[in-house]
Amino acid sequence: MKIISEFQDYYDCIRAYGADPKLLYIRKTSELEKQEPIDIGYSPPPPPSSSGNSIYRGFIAFCGKAYPLYLAPAMLKWKAFYSFDKLYQHIQERAKTAAADNAYHYKQYLKEISEPWPWKHYLGEEYLCQESWDRFCKTRKIDIDDAWFRKYKAPVFLYLEKRAVWRTREANITINPCLKDYNFASQVDPFQAYQQIAMYVGNNLVTQMDPDPYISDELRAHSAGFDKWSFRKKKE
Image 1 (cartoon, rainbow, N blue to C red):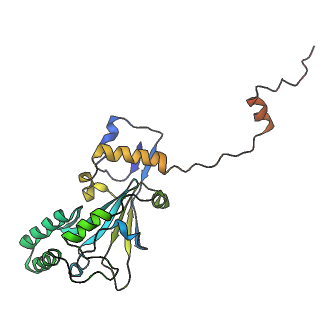
Image 2 (cartoon, one colour; image 1 turned 180 degrees about the vertical axis):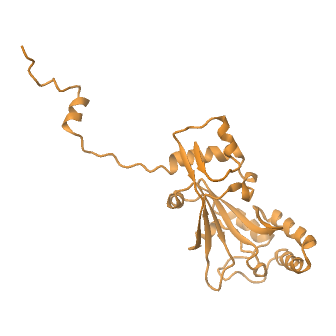
Image 3 (cartoon, rainbow, N blue to C red; image 1 turned 45 degrees about the vertical axis):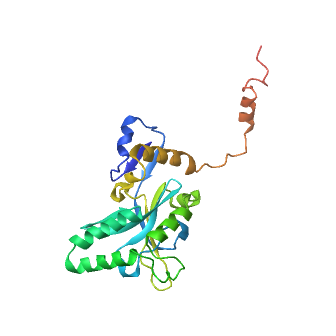
């Protein structure tokens, strides 16, 4: 698979082992803001209200599968977490090492996600805690219809929901994100990632035009084994 891109991703090294030059993946990143939310079954439980816009929830859609994640600030960048345990450990560390103002907020997060909240999110979802995460893992949707990937013309996209504004939900979608920025190798190793993308681009995302049913008389004659001299009288 030949990749045309402005950045290097963690699975690009697999091309050194050989690639099909006829298979092309144009890995161009684009951002779509304030999009309609995708079915809620793919995203993990919403963070507590005190987290404000500092913790996002969503998922990485990768070759027909959904990988739920949280995106939280870590020093000068954002960091992806694919489980409740990892996110909890990160918040614990930030509560100890962050500046006083931020440390207070992280301590509030810890308090809120350490036990179930007495009320639910206005959409009927349980706020994030160990119990709600466990229930989500048992019932979550994994497979995503190919129609979503065809819509964005990409084998990968990132879906993130910011904190819901009163009675509304909005999402930001990144088409063809750089997966190494989200530590996606912890979910799919480089070899499998490259192989799955190549197969998905070469099969699920192929758009083939229906063949033209019209066949000319000349082509029909050739297909039957005749040529231009078959019905002509040869000169004496």
